[in-house]
Amino acid sequence: MSLLILIAFIVILFFIFKKIWAKPKWQIPKGTVPMEWRAILVKNISFYSRLNFKKKALFEYKVQEFLLNHKITGIKTDVSLTDELLIASSAIIPIFSFPEWKYSNLFEILVYPDTFNEDFKFEGEDRKILGMVGTGFMQGKMILSKKAIRKGFANESDKKNTAIHEFVHLIDKLDGQTDGVPELLLEKQYVIPWLELIGSKIDDIYEGKTDINPYGGTNKQEFFAVTSEYFFEKPKLLAKKHPELHALLEQIFDQDFEILAPSNSRTQKEPGRNQPCYCGSGKKYKHCHLK
Ligand SMILES: [Zn+2]
Image (cartoon, rainbow, N blue to C red; front, side, top):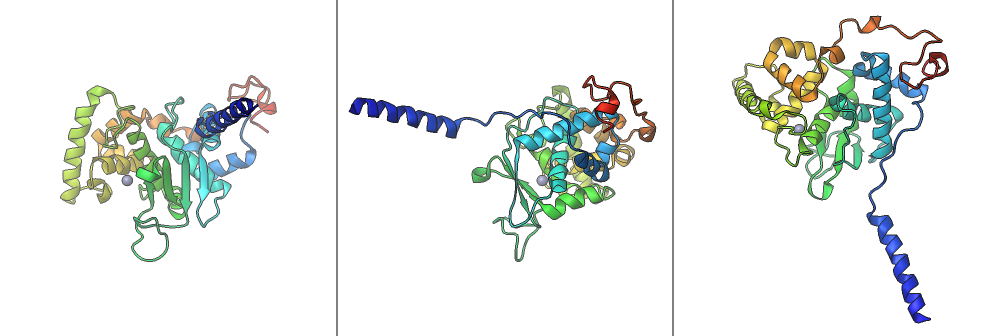
C-alpha cells in the first residue's frame, strides 16, 4: 500500500514540475484583428498606414502574435489597448521583413508610468531612463516608460522612439552579444564596413558635426539603437544626410523606401467588393477585411 502511495506521489510531482518548467506553447493568432485595433493602428502608426493592403494584413497578424505571446504588465499605471498596440508595433516594425522572427529572449514588458532611475524607481530625483532591456535578475524583461512609448509615436520629426530603440537592443542581443552588430540580420561581408562606419560616425558625434542624437556616441550598441530610431522615423532625411549609414541600415532591416516612405502610398488601390481579399483568406473582400 505504501509503495502505491509513493508511486502516486512521484507521478503527481512529475506533473507539477512538468507544468512549472514547460515552455509556454507559442500561440498562433486565429482570425483577423477587431476593427477597433485597425483604427488605433491607422491613427498612431504611420509605418502601418503606409503599407499596402496585403502588408497591412501581415502587420496585423504579427502584432496579434506578439501580444498573444508576450505579457505586458503595468506597474502602478494602467495599460490601454493603444499602449499595447504601440508596444507590439515597436517590436514588429524593425523585423517586419522577417516574418518568421520571434523574440525568444523576451517574456514580459513592464510599463512604468514615466522615466525611472537605475534602481527602477519611478518617483523622486535622478530619473532619466526611458526604457531598458533587462539583464541579470531582469533577464527576459523589458521596461518601458508609458510616456516615452506614446511620445515616440506622437512625434516623428524628433527621430526618437524609445520603444523601437529597446527592441533594436533585443535584436542585437539575440545573437548572444549586445555589441551593435546584429549578426542574425547583417550578412558577414557587411560587418567590417558597418564597424568602420560606426567608428567614423561616432567621431563626428564627438566633434559635434552631425544631427545624430549624441547618445549614439556612448558605444556601438547605442549607436545602432539610436540610428535605427532615425531610420524608422525619418528615412528620407537619413538617406540624404547619411547615405552610407542609410544603405547599411537598409541591409540590416531589409527595408527600403517601398515600405518606409513609398511615394504612392495614398494611391494604392483597394480591391473591389467581390474581388478576393488582400489578406489571402480566399474570401471575397466584402466578407473579409471590408467589414
Ligand atoms: Zn539604448
